[in-house]
Image 1: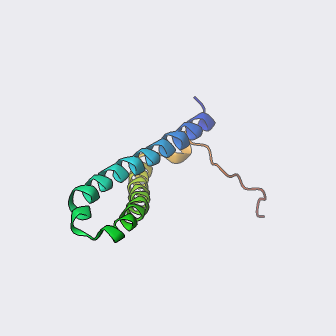
Image 2: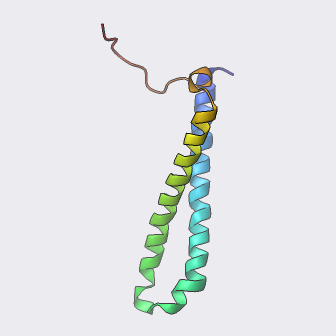
Image 3: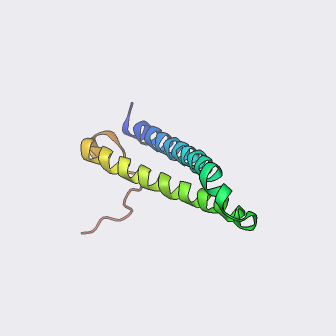
Length: 93
């Protein structure tokens, strides 16, 4: 495989991983909220919890993705396996 294929496969895999982490964290936070928190708060304010759970799952997936990406970048030589996404248009003299 060439660098462009490696880059596209990495982007596709990283996107699927990010979505999967968001879904798993959403399900986990929803379970925790429904089991422990929802029973102790008034019924009028229960709907706000799901909005916060959705936002928190996106934030969690962002931090997990970022941490894993930093770890992989330390271990893998990027220029050897991946093609740059954006090439420079102009060369400075």
